[in-house]
Length: 454
Image (cartoon, rainbow, N blue to C red; front, side, top):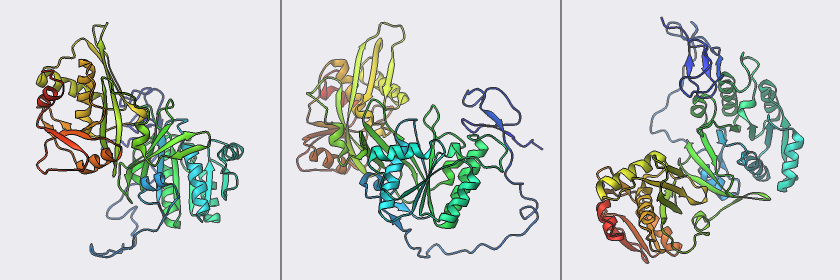
């Protein structure tokens, strides 16, 4: 019989049968800690030899009422939540240090409290005086939000049971300490046990809970991935410190669409919602320049336009550089290979830099054609028309594949004053008044027609 795994890496959650100094999975040092099982496994047909109660079953066609929601009054936040905060739900919010998670949640707590919810904000990282100082800076000191600074999970649950709030915010889950788990705060066992206790308590008592989670170097929430499976909604707060824009992205939502985003702007008075992100991301775009392309994308249910910038220069090194900000580096390598092998556009001996302006991060394959256009534009030193938007997916054969929601992309472009678009050929013709649409079957034809580079 195999041994029980009793050592777990606090960074990635990998399990081992004995201790070692370095984790083989994530290569982190001194992150493997001993963990203890929370419960014994099943014995025979019942758990621990004891029978449980029968679970009530229902039919698939049973009509269940929609879960009640409370709106914060911030359109961008309500959009990401799927229409508002759901009663008896658990949310996990992750983001880089200093990105504005505490600011966002304090503003959200004040909004929900003003809308009639009883809100308790519990900080395990700051004192109540620090939270009050931030509230005064944001102009929220008069909001009916109750504060506490505590890390003992037993005391927190006792307080929540006595106060019976509608919403509890825990900042952060990595600082919580459960006295029935024999490991240090922040360890895999502590994070898993604390998240489980808070989630089950919230659902049992009809309370919503929002937990803040730290992130690792690769951008994922620290601790075991099982925490993300426990909660109903997982949100990531993204952005670059050099930019004022912040993106709240839903990567999991049991009560609404995933991959929905909300856009905020960091100001001296906190986070302000951006009602028209496309106009804001394109506001600093100047005259047409080589390597600059406007991509018409879809984030969740929202069409969004952004600028993709590319720079191609002779490399003084034997190994040319490939630098990417806001897009997948592996996909850039694929686009470069397709351009060279299928279109005859070489990038050998050239440094390539790619950037998504405004700090936005794009994961949609529909950006392939816009990236290819930016790369060829930068290499040929030929600017694309300022009034054109580009979108489409590129296959390894060089063919252009159609993408979803073409009409919504074109309508957003027309609303912002664009008059032409370039996209893959589609079986079903789409027409939007005011937009001249050019379609191509493959990448080689697109490069020859637009740049004459082949």
